[in-house]
Amino acid sequence: MELKQVIIIREDLKLPKGKTAAQCAHASVEAVLRSDKRKINAWRKEGMGKIVLKVKDLAELREYNEFAKSNGLVTAVITDAGKTTVAPGTITCIAIGPDLEEKIDKITSKLKLF
Image 1 (cartoon, helix red, strand yellow):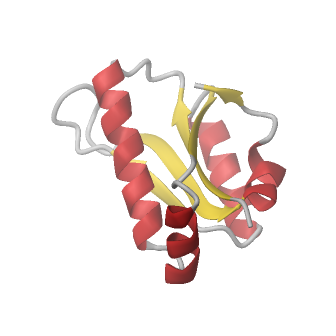
Image 2 (cartoon, rainbow, N blue to C red; image 1 turned 30 degrees about the vertical axis):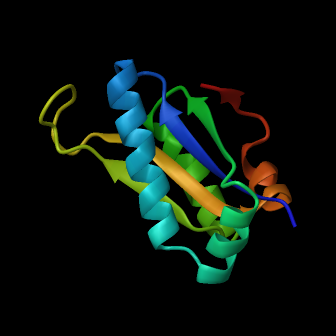
């Protein structure tokens, strides 16, 4: 069973590298906290595979989030507190999974690496 997690970040925000890393970490942790314990344990045994992809803007990010949720996948939407780079309440990224690779790929296979 191949499991992975995908994090999708908005390209239009042009976040600094450190901010991007922090937002991706928030998304990963939040999605794991919402996930089934058996999937988490299996994913951990496999090495906790993650991939970071990009979308052009908020509208596209929302589309992928809704598509993932409608296909039964766990998602986590990250909204920034606005203390450093972006305005408070800015949605920066989402995480999908961990879940079966083929289920996630069905949703995200057309996206490019960040």
